[in-house]
Length: 323
Ligand code: NAP
Image 1 (cartoon, rainbow, N blue to C red):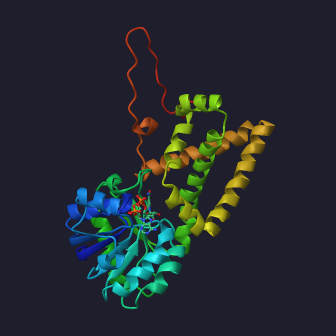
Image 2 (image 1 turned 45 degrees about the vertical axis):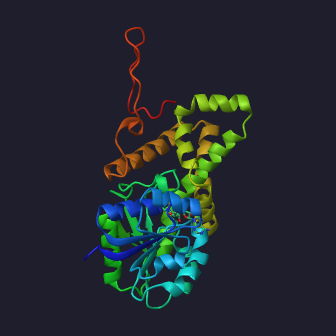
Image 3 (image 1 turned 90 degrees about the horizontal axis):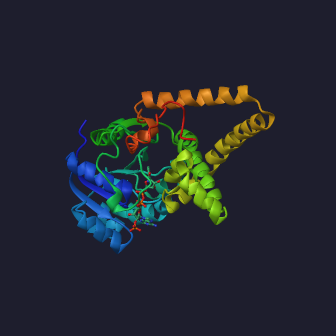
């Protein structure tokens, strides 16, 4: 199945949109790439970075004649964008997106699309905490999953064509039901972000003296939450507004499990704590074995060599974090 499209329209050109533009260009997946965004300064930045061939602030203009359209804006903007592009879409075009939630996307986008286009929502499980056109890089999707959630009305060959496009950018592709996607992502992505936002928020509320100590000693664990908690506020606001039910369901389970840990700490139940930490360690090992994370200690961060010969220390591996 060919992964090639005549005209690829990207609506939104931040981290994900620009990474698609760069990967599609490098792999020769589109003859023409047209880019639409909301603000002139973002459009100018995309043009300076030579991310596409056509640049416009009018999403409808961008999709005219496109055989692949991908919405790459925050999910909260989808309703208005779908209304705008609906009448301009080419018959037979594939319309997709990259939003982090899927049921809501189907609800707000599908009603505005003409019957003769193929709507195949998508979600690349790949990202960083950076935003904007300059944040993108063509390897972002390499080795990462892309989930497609086509409805039953979508012909299999159209889904396969979009899957081939993602595979050509390095992704592994899986199709699933939109509701199932939202439940899985609630626990693998949305709750971890909520926890990170919360723990970093707690530090932000501490008095200044304690806060500076937290920052000084952040390598003991806190630092790793701050990367996630630095993610784009608008994008994540929209995720929690639009995947409310699945997030609340998983948050309920999370809080129950947290209470169990709280009780174990309060009662000094070392066996319970050790059993839990042993199970969680096994999960990390399986993520590494699945190629979704580096096996290098401390995420492969470079470490300074200590000065010789006065100070010598041996760094122990496998003992957890630097706590
Ligand atoms: P980003 O870097 O912040 O870029 C967002 C883009 O959308 C910008 O071009 C922005 O335009 C445009 N936009 C914002 N609000 C808009 C509006 N109301 N109407 C039209 N355009 C608007 O965002 P991103 O990280 O690429 O995320 C884009 C999508 O990818 C989101 O739906 C997110 O859920 C999904 N996603 C993100 C990640 C991740 O790790 N970041 C991973 C997977 C999926 P202006 O700059 O011109 O305002």
